[in-house]
Length: 130
Length: 169
Image (cartoon, rainbow over all chains, first blue to last red; front, side):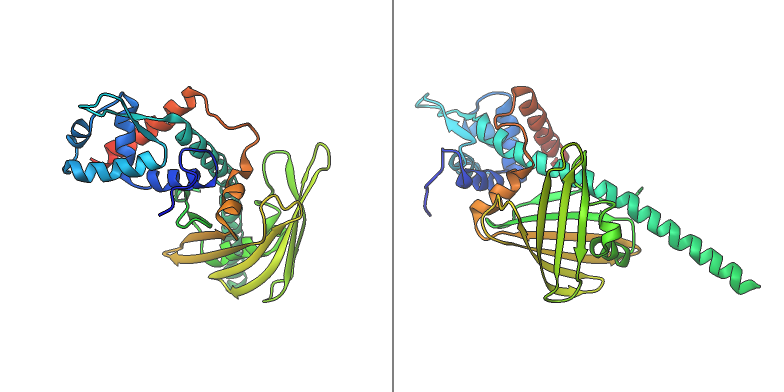
C-alpha cells in the first residue's frame, strides 16, 4: 500500500481520516486520548481486546495522522493530533448541515403533499356518498 | 414531520459520498418531489438567500435536466445539469451531474434509491465522482470559512465521539 500523502494535507489524508473514524473502537480510542496521552496497555484496558488488536487500530489512526507517538522509549505513549480530525470533521459538518436543512424542507413539503392527498380523499368520499 | 430519520453521510469508497435519510411519506411522493420542477423548487432551493430559479426536467432516459440556483441579493447564478441514465418510477433514478462553474473536475453520477416500508421511505443517495480528488472537492464545497477549527469546536467533536463510545457500552 502506498503511503504517499499521509501526514500532509490533501485528498489522501481526508480519506484516511474518514476510514479511521468509521470504526467505533477507533472513535473511542480518540475520545480517550482527548483526555490525555496513554500507552497501548492503558488504551487496551477498557476494551475486551488484546494489545496487538489495539495496536492495529492505532496503526490506522497513526497513518491518518490522528495519533502520534511520544518519545518515552519505555511507554511510547500515544497522543491525539487534532488538526486532521478538525479538518475532515469541519468539511463533513458543513456538508451535513446543508443536507440536514435541505431535507427538513423536503419533510415539510411531503407533509403538505400527504395532507393534500388526505383532503382530496375525504372530498372524493363525500362526493361518492351523494 | 414526526418520524423522519436521522441523516447519515459516509464515504464508502474513495470516489463516493453516500447519503441516507428516512422520510415519513410513501415513496411515490418522494419520487415526485425529486422529479417535478414545481416541487423541487420548494425544497432544493439551496442555502439561505438562494432560490432554485430555473428547474427544467425532461424525465426520460437520455433526457436532460437543468437547475440554476440564484442568490437573491446580487443575482449570482450557480447552474448545474445532466442527463438521465435510468428511471424506474418510483424507486430509482440515475443521472449525471456537472456544474457550469465546474469546481470539481469531470462529471459525477447521482443515484437515488427509494425503499418503502409501512408508509415510510428510506432514501439512499450516492454521488460517484470521477476521482478521489473530485469527490473531496465536492465534499468541501459547503465551506465558506477557511480550514482550521478552533479548539472549542474540536471539543464539541470529541464530546460527540465520547457519546458514541458510551452508547456502544
